[in-house]
Image 1 (cartoon, rainbow, N blue to C red):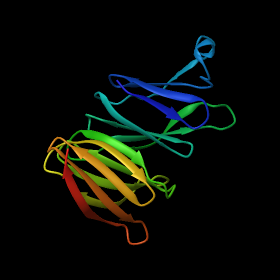
Image 2 (spheres, rainbow, N blue to C red):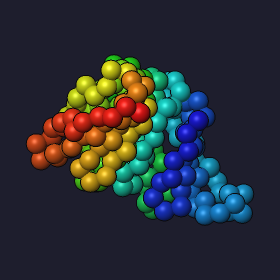
Image 3 (cartoon, helix red, strand yellow):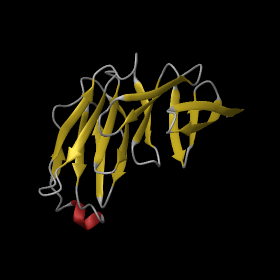
Length: 173
């Protein structure tokens, strides 16, 4: 199961292939008054990762897909905005948004990293990053940090203008 904070006071959580969003979850007392929004249609298999970028929420699953959920600012409802059905050749294991405000990075259990435009959901770059599953991604500026089951942590430099990534080195984890 995953829990992910979204802009403002919203929280998204997963249970198997379902995603539920709680809006205005500011404290424990407010949770009892919050109406949950269940995302539909659900993934076909367990959700393994989530990331937010602007007003979008992204979910990645063992069904190899990434879904972009859009929030209607006037009524707060969440709807499926886009679905990338074969985002990876295997499970989508980790995701993070990049600081450029336009890109999402996803990873797979086979060690691949892919960069997506958040508005169009088009692939803008990819690299074979690790020899095993990428378990976590963090981004800061143009630096991307990945941790893998191959027992390494790698630092990547992302150049959004040229849409490429290069390995900046690794350390044993």
